[in-house]
Length: 505
Image (cartoon, rainbow, N blue to C red; front, side, top):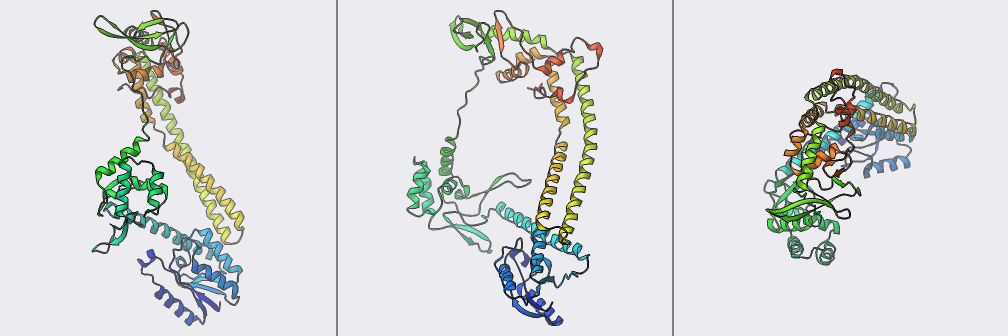
């Protein structure tokens, strides 16, 4: 290496670590002077090193291509060269090598003829990439902290401008467009709710945003002096009081939100508590759902179920009482419930042991695949595989890891204790089913019916026709009269389906 270009680089985050363009340039020039290197060109950069889409860096490539005499590119440290992913960085180093240019960091020099340089280069480049992620995370944390303190971070929204307070910290202040914002809200809350019409009107005046941004403007709490902070990895979305001046009143903003949300409100039909079997009971003659109605009699109004074509009528009180008596047939003996719970406990204990073994196997597979990726990285550095093969294999290995980690996560997500809690509640409900049904409110009655009877009920004059039961309940009840066997064949899959029938309901 004799003829070189030097490349100091700095970014906002790097300034914190004491880097400076002048300091780097001084180090590079003194190094060249000591080693008799000729500096043909000096390029300096102030862009992030997270990728190579840097204006000055691209100029280096063009300069090297047009000046074959150049055989070296010098940086102070490898993180000055790149903080990108390791494969991107290595690809760029190879690109310079094909142009006859050796890349070198004067404070982290590598002997390219020594095979061990691959390990050191991998460490340097990976460290730079990891630090870039750490810097990014620190910036996000700092920005979130500032927002929690009430400061708007980023470009000021329409109606405000970016400024600094007396402590030179960022703050937004109303500008000449603040009155336009007030006018938009006034029009919207006074009945002009067509956003497209508002967009056309104010685009001809002062508004310079898009139609979708106008909608966002109407829902942005920044205009009432608040800041909405989006949820993070472990933090929920929150709203804080901003330190900036509000442009519109709380009442006007709330009125706008009510208008907007009103467009999306779906009207729901309330369940009539007087007719809990509505939608569940069929006419025994024609098989069609029975409707409900009222009749006036001695003492007031009476509810009934009816089938108009067949002229079938039954009072709500009678239908409900007969169904309660019918449910008494499906009571679960306490002894059977206890056996099922014991079996379920054993099933989950065995399942947990099996999953622990499988988890160890998956962990080993993940480690093995990660080691293969590291080995592939070393082969790529050593030119043992080309870029296309490297990219294809690495993508495949990463996909394998994702699948393995997904399987591992699914295993740890099994909530056996919660399942058993609901199963215990369901068994308690079944031991006193008819009385629980009698005491339940209409909404819960409807849920109970849906769980027990997968099909509608056929009502006959004084009873309910035998109807199809939930297969799990049928299996449980089949053991009700054979307690002497004590062994109830089941699997954890047989238990699913009744766990949401909580006795506390």
